[in-house]
Length: 99
Image (cartoon, rainbow, N blue to C red; front, top):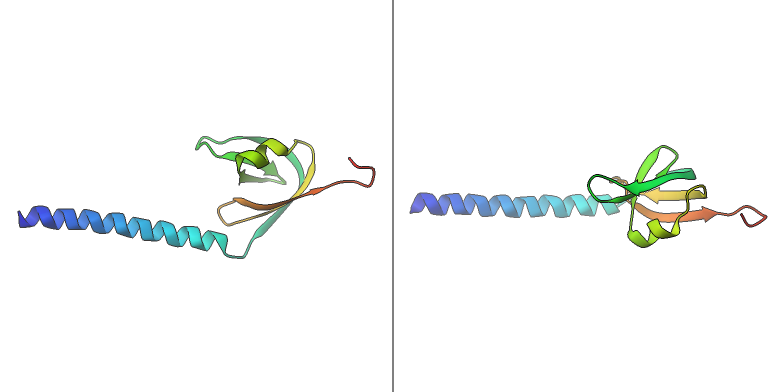
């Protein structure tokens, strides 16, 4: 009986430790420094893990569904992104003639 409780406590500690590590990792991801990819959006698609991605200047970046739907292949963008390559800010650059 005591051995069973020790195993259960050990499993509980592993779950708690995993949750704390995930929380710290997520927190670290939202803190600077941020990275920038600037150039033509040349591809977009769904990755094997189900995340929506855009490809800008050699970088595959994660975006949410509304952003994915709004962006158009061929447009010039400047994307600020986190360590985990999640886009946090996207600026569209428009030429003087509006294209």
